[in-house]
Length: 271
Image (cartoon, rainbow, N blue to C red; front, side):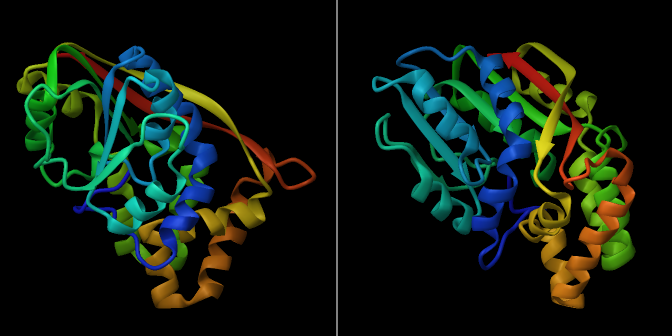
């Protein structure tokens, strides 16, 4: 879920990313892997792998005879990914690289997945062409990108809080996470040579821990939260948390937890 154009972590952010993004990512990781129909012995690439959520989930699906690779341009994310990879399945190979220049041979993979990374690619068309190059004929591709933020109340609240405490420029950068449309993504992969390319929205209700703790912790793992801390200090980040709790108060239980809908666009294709 990271790329050099719009998502770079620093300091201890990758560790917090692993902790706080996991509950939001989990159902979408399952959806993207279900879409590529993995089988024992398959070779799969997790594109823009972040801390390796999809790569780790793919490992038991392909089994000891399979092969799992992950690429990301963020060294910190890869360090955390390597620390959390399982040992009872095929050893996952994590490599620092961009989606626009993959370090793999032609037709190397039976499947390529990309969980919340395509919206940050510097050159989506180049990344799609590289994905097509490394996918075998008949192989599958699947990616998720966030649908418009207003379809996910948590993200809508996060945007308003970022705008209040981080300013218009930081908020504008944040909105880029939601600007990769289904039409743009399917067009890029069709042009690259994928067939039967389709897109659909998927929504999951996700149970979040106590929002007063989770909201600032989650944002601290993301570049926009890092900018807020850099300019306003930890108190500004705490203010973001309070603002989000207030905005989501009608969706929060008495103990401060919440189950909220999150919506993404799932794009699939066959090479």
